[in-house]
Image (cartoon, rainbow over all chains, first blue to last red; front, side):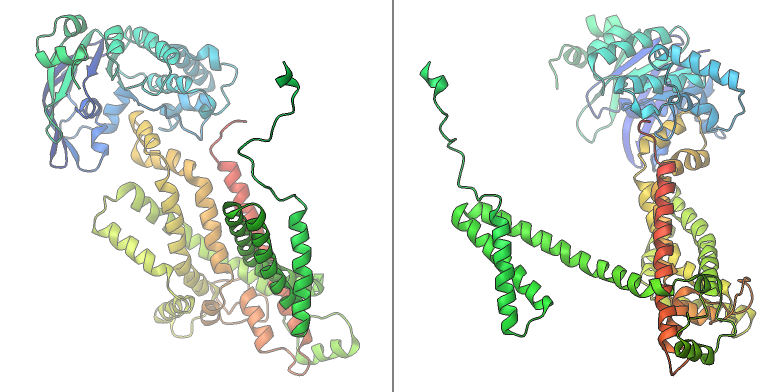
Length: 259
Length: 367
């Protein structure tokens, strides 16, 4: 239930502005890959190209290849909706649907597409997804209550449950803990460690300790100056990036000497 | 030790403060002075109220300035002015409702609500005035006409306005088409209603022959006035739906149109519903476009596609301008006020319905 992603010579544009230049990365199946780097270096932008969410912004486009187990996501005739149903995403700020209950939020991917699902299957899917997101015990008695009534950390785990309910191959996380307190962050990090048994996970984070704790591989992005495109500086096993980086700028960044 | 038992000295931060009763004393003084000055000019309650208000503001501020200091006095002056502005804004509204209730209630009979003006002549009105019997004739046909024409106007305007707003917010990328739509919607908001009426009359005259006057033509005229209001209201509501919700839906592999119908519109539905209600309230009282498009009928007409029709505003207009009996106009005037009361009640009911809809669909916070 998980696939690898190979990114080849990827350039990302906002209209004419080149935001991210020439990225080559391999995201292994059943592993956690972290993207770190200073603000504005294009790591979130890059992450959004991996499930074709980048083009939702008017004028945004991409050159290059993103291969999901060998299939190019940017081939002519590829339906972005189909891509997104295989590559799920969790956002920086928890965004449960305010009009729906906790249960309906988990089932959103099924219900919004008007797929038929029997009540017993739906119940099983809700429980499985919420257990997968470590949220079941906290909300099992109030599934009919609105999702917006939960705490921030619970809402974020609800969003993760919502993402895994459509059984994607890959889960992308865009700074999933930046709006959360340390305890909720710990809960999410534990969850990420469990998720990698079943899914391929890519995570953008500002928190270097978090990258060191949860990821198997780390990619360091940097930007030469404002207005210049962001670049992938170094990519390798997390232990190497943090303990034995090849590039000077990586070493400066992970040791806090820079920016 | 002795410090603890000593009474505390007053805080250095306190200043002189007027006692609570002082404001009532100033008010009483202002009322007496106002009455006195008003009596000099020939007493009337209105001049007394105006003078008393002026004396109250000047006196209250002056006393405060003398005792409490400049900053407090300015605070009081601003407070008085804000309350004054509120009273000035609310008085006409209360006065209108009071007048309509006072004059409309006597005419609000079963006969008025469920009979039309069919066959009611000036002689009958004269007779009721002579005999002192209750006024005959009613506005049943006008109530039905108002409901039908407004319903058809809504049926035309809401889909058009909603879809236009969805295009503007969800699909357009700021190109020439969307700028043109926005521009013409703005222009249409300012169209005088009689022009909309003439437009609809001319359009249907071209298609179905001159002098085509039906309820549906009136509904078309009203929808010209309604569409821009619906577009504007819906557009604003769709704009405030957070983009994060759209992205969350896209990221689950949901198509754009499903995202719009199942996430964006449900989130904004309460605002859209109240916007539509406001649009209906805006057109339900229109008189001029109805006169030139639906004519005027004295009897019940249930078919919006043929024959002339009355609405409550045109009914009021005709009762006042051309009373049924030119010699004794009281029955007609009473009918006009009763019709005005019904119109206000209709608009209030619409508002209530919109609030109910808004509450039913509103995003759930906690139950």
